[in-house]
Length: 244
Image (cartoon, rainbow, N blue to C red):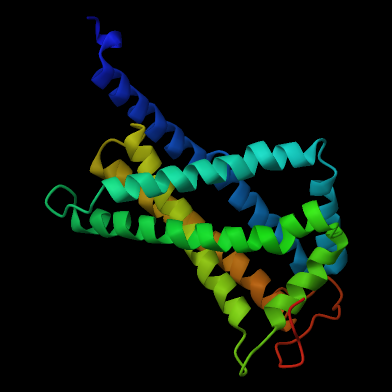
């Protein structure tokens, strides 16, 4: 029996390839999409007209439904489902890994679950409404404003949920990039791994600050970058606002 005919060898090779595909899908296309999505949404800082123009550019992509299905939805489900499989089979091991990396492993699994739940709700809130119920892309901005400015008992729960979920997504991406570089042999030594951690940590912090500014602007109408665009009618948080 050759090595290729050995069932255990084939299973091991298949598991290795799935892990590699899982790792790669977290960077491309999902990581790239997260960066693009946060950047596009940040166009709202320039007013509704600029946001609508940015969304219109996305909507003009040829065969967009197929791009979204094969470039986002299917990779997302694969990454999430196989991530759950890895989480159930693996366990933190302080004896084998440095204490910090051990905590990063735990947080990577927790944030993965948080992000998946949020993305499912976010897809229902916008993409499913567009695909199945005819929601026009021009309704994205006012819907975001209405949802993020909604309060209950004086607390903007949806906006807080967005901020927490975005923090989880950005951490998951930044830490995933560090792990990707380690597992693919890009950063071999401790010094290289530390540099990668600082680099991707800085990237994650920058993305989160951008996303936080966007969410707070949509929720409160506050302009953190004066002069970017003429003020428009962005609602402030208050009990009179209600999600659609």
